[in-house]
Image (cartoon, rainbow, N blue to C red):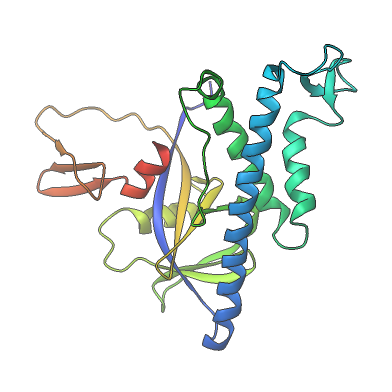
Length: 255
């Protein structure tokens, strides 16, 4: 029997770990990726909306086929490729050489999934189409992360992200970020596709980790108090220990 798993997101600040004179080039690269993600996201969602609504274009002739499928697999299909690959190829061709295709592929899959969940509301007119803004997070596929290690002298975890050397800045970390990253290096947990957020001249890694659920026996003598907070969705206090669960950014993103 397979063990069930859960995913948790941790917001970790990153610092570009190169000489000062090379940092401007790295920042330019990240902002270019963010801009291309912003443009690609709006292109993808616009095309998905037209694809779904084409059946309601009542003014088309009866001979028009409108099944959203590959014509090679369905004679009523209007696509020359799979539905998922339509928007993927669109942005691959549009931004070729300007941004890694791994980022665009991850972005396409995320938007396709989100659109599928909301398309019934779009069709009924009860929800407006999503509009992606210029500060959109950059998808960070696992394959775009390499050479992760811990440097004792720097007290930081370092790795390459999009071939950009970075290191973590945990500051006075009272959460479990350090221990989570240590467990990742020991391969006790799994890193999933994450995101990179550029905000106020800083870089934040919205890292997604997959854990195996653990069975814990409850101790009736220990009472935990949970309260809501502006900065963290839940604040838990137990035995004079205070723990923050989640972050404002994670809550807003998942909502």
